[in-house]
Image (cartoon, rainbow, N blue to C red; front, side):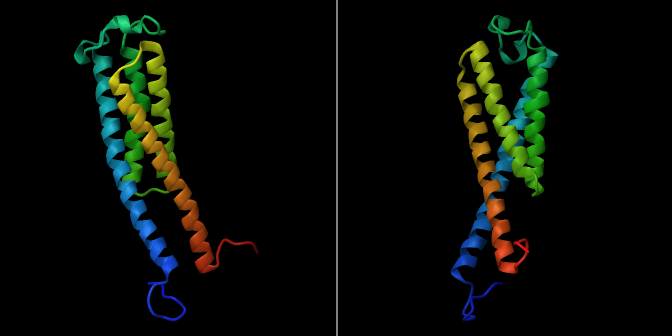
Length: 168
């Protein structure tokens, strides 16, 4: 436990730092849960599109693809499961393990989901589920950015407390 120079308990700066670390752990765990659930949904939906490329297992019509380069739902299913699903499951597992690159992978996954949904919206038109996943990708991406910034701040704080990493 860090104490102030008067040795009367933790200094204000250390209390704020410790609260920030605890809040970061909670945000990391929340990201992990949402990422794994999002990844599982993408893996499931993509797999159903691969198994039945006519879209019948999930209520998709082939005529929705008329403005796209696709003739059936197989390749969109591969992209959904392979890119979005895999990225989010990996991000969630890294977050759960508190891996040092977890926030970066979360940011990439969140941004990738936003791009995926925007392209889908442009090609086949709006569906309310796209809004849900656009929001999910945006919130996860923003949370990951916050974690990355917090990580830099924690590194700077540790360096200032312990006198490491500064100019020599």
